[in-house]
Amino acid sequence: MKKLISTTLASLFCVACLNAQTFDMKVAQPSYNDSIGYGWDVTNVPTAKELKKGLKRPVFFSVKVPDGNYKVTVTIGSKKYAANTTVRAENRRLFIEPLSTKKGELKTFSFVVNKRSPYINNKMSVRIKEREKDYLNWDNRLTIEFNGEAPAVAAINVEKVDNVPTIFLCGNSTVVDQSREPWASWGQMFTRWFDDGIAISNHAESGLTAGSFLGSNRLDKILAMMKPGDYVLCEFGHNDQKEKMAGSGAWYNFSYNLKKFIDQVRKNKGNIIFVTPTQRRNFKDGKIQETHGDYPDAMRAVAKREHVPVIELHDMTRTFFETLGEENSKRALVHYAAGTFPGQDKALADNTHFNTWGAYEVSKMIVMGMKQLGLPIVSHLRSDWKDYSPDQPDDFNKWNWPLSPIFESLKPDGN
Figure 1 (cartoon, rainbow, N blue to C red):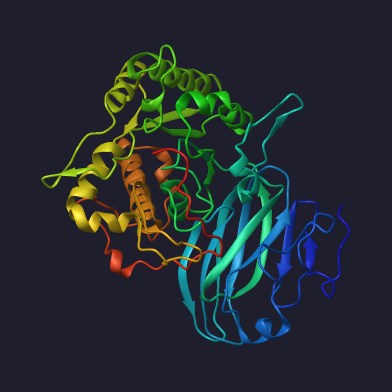
Figure 2: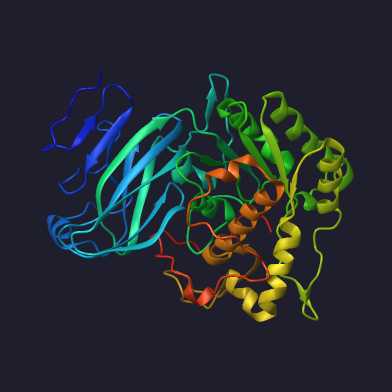
């Protein structure tokens, strides 16, 4: 049994060998280090004044844990001041949208965070890219971000859970948990819609093809973590169409790699779902022009032959962009004037990669695709879920996303 640590030192409690740790955030906590295994991380430790009168900046708290799924329960608010708090985890995965609490009001929420490392077994690890080495997704701890106009957290409980179904995500820069503002992808918004009976494990990375995903051992990592009945969602096509090696193309190499996903997932008793690629913002006469060649049709053909359900994100994002129109569709993507973000000396105009609002909207399309397929797992949607249609998008003027403190002007790999 773990040694009980005094609340005056760290307010860490171990609950009867159940891998549960509770932190009283109303008292001082240390800066994170591996030897202690918990503490404030990423940004400066909150001062005594901030704890008493309220934070006005984002803060992060980390707990060192093994790979797995963890039920995180947070108590939001303060008895001393009114607060407004957004909760995210790891690489900006959204769990709680901006939430206002009155002075003295406390609200408690639970959600499941998947934590992983590159390690698979004694002979194999995921071959992560250089840019991934500082991702919060791949380190040895679970990190929770508290952001907003006046973030306040009173307590955190972290408990390992082994019995919840997991949805694994495979794909490229349109799926990955983007680590830096202003970039975002639907995978890190998808977590917002599920209750604490579901885990989301996003293994996508910018620039990957179906083949390089397999070649970097990412599917092997998923298979090592998978339980019978878990789900694997695969979205590829953006980068696959740029492959030029022998045998490349939609109908041979791409299709062959998709079949590998199917066979391996089913061998491990998982459920595989295909997701056709998001459209690029490429307008002519008010209509989106096709830029993916035969790749969406190749994915559909493999799915039909192998009886794989398909979420038609390709069609939904076309409707979404055309509904917004040529100019307003920029509001869903990384289109920003120079100087919008710290260190951004040039304008950003990216017609592939989504910003946070666009990624949020696309995540709703994925959920609707799952509902249209009648997948049992949608029974775990949160009670505030409302059905969505891409021809009736949310108002981008009402979007509220408190910025995380890490920015990058360099576009993600892939296009």
